[in-house]
Length: 289
Length: 142
Image 1 (cartoon, rainbow over the protein chains, first blue to last red):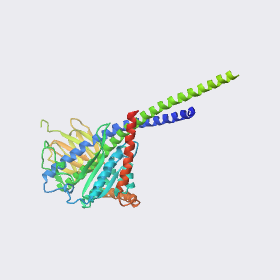
Image 2: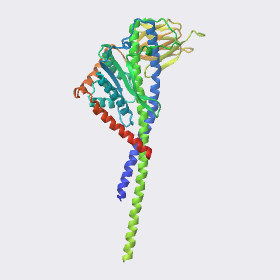
Image 3: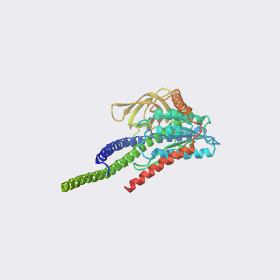
């Protein structure tokens, strides 16, 4: 029978672990709410930009934005992999990285080279560790996604597409379904399908005056649209992160609770055993006298 | 339109909805010059420079001031939408950001092998997934 003092120390240590996981759970709950709000706030902008870009593209059918032109052969692809900076959030990063690895294997089998952009520390570490060609990366994003920090890394890929160096760009991130479910998702960002930019039929078609000229404005709008999509992916990823962490920490807290219960039972048993033994010794000692 | 004296004004950025409401008049810093927009303006689409957007609220004397770091302005006869950038943009600045990101990646790229090791990567992920599955099963049992 293990010494009950040792068990007591063990109980104490599990108790303090439980305190930490409990605190992390509560932090995640409050951060999750804010992250969800931010995720929702990014939607109207992307909608508006898409509508206006769609209107303009329809009004100027002779100009097609390069992002909408499909390259004939697929030789090199760009992947934007969105992951979290911190761990302890369940299988979320593992799932999105598995999706990435599968995609890269498919590309490798088809003889397509891959340029990766890593958003988030976990993905960056993973891709670098396994020797992926990482052309740019952003890590330490914090709790609030800042578009400012995403522009540069993404521009590396979009520029490459414009220069015909890359033939498609895909976006991989974790989609926030609800607080219990987050699924890894993959989207073809560029080339965009013509239907991507189709505006709402209900909206009026107007002849715009464009300053300085329609082409410049369409270019700007399409770039903004792409950035808004990436921003949304990062915002969803952050909401997913907090939700996944809350779940993981809740499970950890529950587990710590059951471990403590088990240990306490063991502790009481061993304490009782030692008392019984002591009494037996005294009684048999007295009988001998 | 019953009331042609007001405009629906919306200022949105990718990060948040900055302003939404009815106005009588809006003044903004357009790329080619300061713009003043009244209801029933011709449809117009232009870029705006960083600066203040002044919004004269409908039926009230005060003006709402919103600062934008540039963006795109979309004008309809009854509505004005400002698609604001959250960051100060500019071709040179964006280029600088891209270069910086590229440089950071090159540093890490320098000390890694050229080929992505699919087998190893999958092996590591498989282990992680197996661990998670085992944990889930453990939890179900208890």
